[in-house]
Each structure stands twice: as C-alpha cells, then as structure tokens.
Image 1: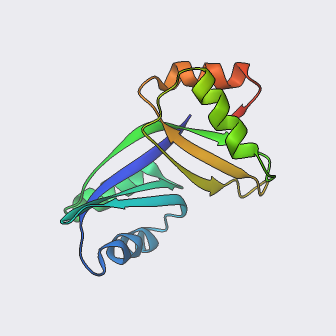
Image 2 (image 1 turned 45 degrees about the vertical axis):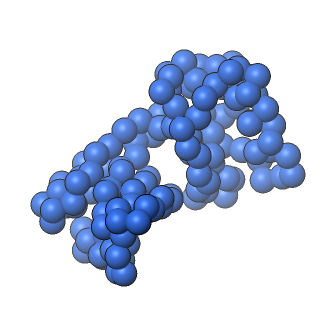
Length: 134
C-alpha cells in the first residue's frame, strides 16, 4: 500500500510551481502526480519520497493537505495491460474513485495508482487475480 498526499490549492497561475518549489527546497522527490481543477480550487495528488515531511512543509506554508492510502498496481508495458486490469476491476464490481499512472523507477514499468473506498479488500482481490500490488 502506498501513501498519497492531496493538496488543495487555488486555481491560479504559478500555484503548482509554488508547491513543487517548496518540495525542491525540502529535498522531496515527486514520484507521481495528477491535478484536478475547478474554477477556483484544484486538488494536486502526489506520491512523494517523504509523505510526512511533505505534509509538514506544505502545512507550515498554509496549504490544506492530507495523506491517504492508495494502491499501486505494477503492469507490463504492453498493449492491453491497462484494459485487462480494468476488466478485472469491473468483474469484481469494484468502484474506483480515480486513477492515474506513474512509473516504477527501479523496473521502468508503469504503475496504475488507484483509490477506492474498499482499499484493503481491493488489494487482496487484485493479488488473488495475480496482479503485482504495491
């Protein structure tokens, strides 16, 4: 199981760079990221090298942020891998809140990051189906 940091930020020019600048100053590496926005605010979701240090640094600078558990599913970098995983999730009647991709820097393989309300059950389900869950 992986930890993710969710950061609430104003939807304005330079907002994402301000966050990445803080992380750079703190020596924190961003391993994966996705942003979702609305008219006024956005949510930046990140997998970072040090979750607690990230929370502390961003909170100290006025950001509202939290961490939560997510699943990472390492896949082969070949046609159909993502579709096969999504089929398995559908067959298990699993509802996913959101997904995004990053890469395992050691193996070079894609890792699908997903969040669901039943995270522990989904982790066991995917392992039983033969998926490599992180």
